[in-house]
Image (spheres, each protein chain N blue to C red):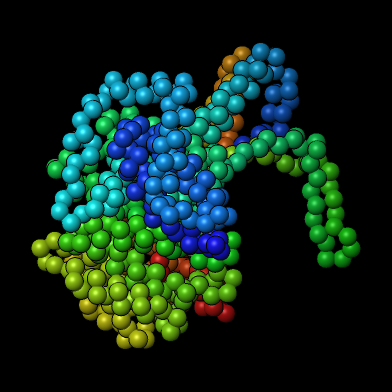
Length: 131
Length: 416
């Protein structure tokens, strides 16, 4: 079963990460890279990407009359932003949660876990049961 | 000479794959390297035979190429190290690694079964066992398997490689299970084959077309096991179940992958030949002495398939069969289907009462199927509002796009 793990970074999280000491930043990067590598080796990795920050985002919305509106980020009303995702093919939901928990505990300032919230969602692709 | 068709080459290669791997393994005990070598030989054959034709002795050609790859591999440091490790843990006991096939059983077929038992090893997760079985026994390429399961090829390659490592770590890889574990190991094989079948059966249109081939592959492999163990009633039962289910494939989906439930299917589209074969198989196999879940499920599928119209379905017989099935399995899905059959025979209130008893089953908690069945029975019972609510609840819980559409449509039709 495939799951998407969505990393939900709070607005304050971006500045926190950007202002980390170089060695903390390095430790954080290595932790995430090692986890990513592990998922590739275990044959569970389907896709994964990090996203640029909300400053580079735009919201595009079609309108009934006139051209679509385009709003540039960062969006003042949003409390958290999608910072990156993994799509994993795992045996159980528990396994997906376990991986999300490990990613959530990635080290931040002075090695303390950041505890970033991860949303875990099954992908809409599984075959239906016999009816 | 005219080059053979791609399909002809492909089906020949799939047929030969387990035989070639078995033959290579008789001389070389490194399962991991042998399986890689055979895969490379199959890829080379697929390229060459399409252009210059199939050689006179295709099986010998593949064995020779695979053997040569093995030699190349053994020369590399990694393989040498692995071989040394293996040599330290294994005895060169030919009796144990290649026992005499019994009377009437050819060595090649024996190899196929032995490979199946190996690939469906209890140390593997079902996902790994499925991937390894399709490659080592089914002769599919890693790319084909990756395609069917919609994951990158590198991911599938890793999954297969890890599965092989795991089997190696379990010791004495290429041997038949001991007498006492035989039945349990064979059940594991049947379960993996059934999972492969279901992966393929469930999708039959559009971009998922490649997955549909998995159903055919599962039938082919199960047929091979049945040829070798013709007296095993559960093997025959599983083959019958697959044939009787697959027979409805063309009627099961409409345009754009829309799901069509059994009761509304155009039965003229059912595959009569497959139904005939499945019914004959299950009729021969069913025996009170060795009754098992696959036989009973096949018998139920046969009752459905033999009804010319949905209204002709012999629900009393289906209800009795579900009763037997429930007595030998502890599966909440079986109890769910039992409730449907009870509703069809004794009326929806009886079925709904049986569903209420399932509310506390934690294995069904949050499962869309319970809500979907309840919705159907409530609709049958004329409880429109409650049915709409249950259809919507089921639609929220399913992870299948066509099923979500179907359930939402049922709710909308009742509401409208």
